[in-house]
Image 1 (cartoon, rainbow, N blue to C red):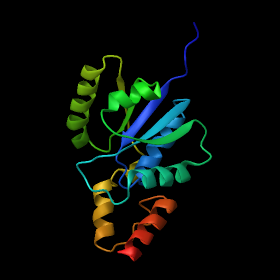
Image 2: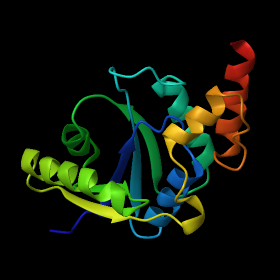
Image 3: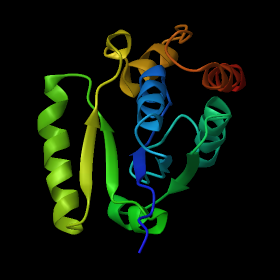
Image 4: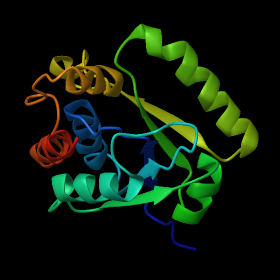
Length: 164
């Protein structure tokens, strides 16, 4: 029986998708032949942009990168992974402070589905200070998010600002 190529899932709210996220996807694409970027529809939060729009912007950003798929999902990550035919979760870690939370989540995902493995990737040092929370705060306060997010995301956030 031939083995299927390993698929990794990089899931998150990506609200918004920033350069640190992009760096993790690029790194993952050099390791895994197929990477599924799963955009979480989190009903507990009000995102800047709806999940479908985030999917469009991420897909535009990643256009031309072979083996990358972008889709939205709801519910448990392990259920989405089964649908994606993946057993590898990708998580980005910027600092030691991320470790405790990410470690707990990795163990819980393994508890929910014992075939799941979590792979932690670190972004390039130039992106370690970027987080969705920081980008949202800068944007909400009227700041320029150029250099923090890919160009399609920057344009979408500017359009959102002009409509507000």
